[in-house]
Length: 394
Image (cartoon, rainbow, N blue to C red; front, side):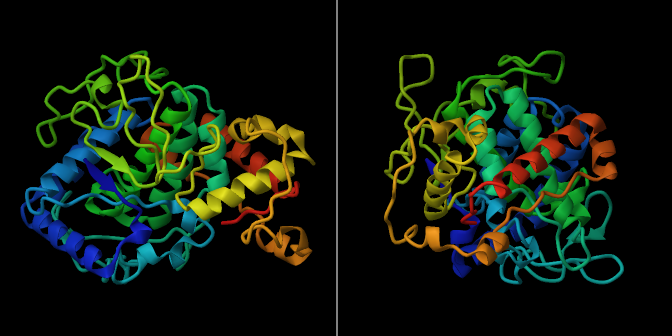
């Protein structure tokens, strides 16, 4: 069982080893192959429930290829909520990690573990990176919104919309360049980002019905018997959606360092999912989109306090609401909360996530009105939180 760790926790030596594996995959043509497959399958793996099982399998297949060069190779996940306020300042975008903004008229990436690479698909070109706000990146999605989706979205179809039209697109568009194209797997960020998307889906699965699979599929209504889209470049051997629904079963031999481990028994056999995270039992089903346990603890405490002023917030965070009434909590982390000044509260106001661009919506064939409604709903929740007593710990 391989454990996918937070990219924020990796050492310089671990980043260098990832870079060595990627260089070998680049030289062997494997990265070109994954980029080509993603472009070819693009329409069938976006805008439907297929989005989740396809990318779970796609990232795992990439890992399996990487392990032919290093048996310990594992894709780290990039919890982008930790960097959402000013993504360009993220330690993940430094010269020793993924590198920063592209340079020159072609926006070629010059630093990082893929710095100065020439990609072979589609056609020879430098690996490009072009931040969507000049030298900065427009805000991504705060952890509190992801927490709300995990707790309140009852069906995978709605959760998929909130994720795909929100945090998924925001990070792709924020980095720009190759990342904002159909051949985004050229940039290793793609696999780290989708490992995080998969982690969020797994958190949602542990909050609701782990085998829930509804909404639009590849051909009509989604079904667990649907074959996951594949082609000759990246073949999954005819694997069906059902085969990747539960971590730790079938060939899905990985877990996350900030999410529940595999259940003791396969769902439907009378089991209770294993909800331990780092050997700690989370409160009720109040899972958070954040991977930082200290921040998550404060998020719960402060949200419960906010309920006393605006009880309507409970419908957005039913997992937190189920914990019970707020009580006085005296910890080193929280003891100065009541003394938080107006200036400090203003400084920690949540930011609106950037909307999806018309180009991005058109490229995916999304319903522009639906995407716009998802964004308006997100901004409404940001307003409700900012107008309450809640102060973000992130």
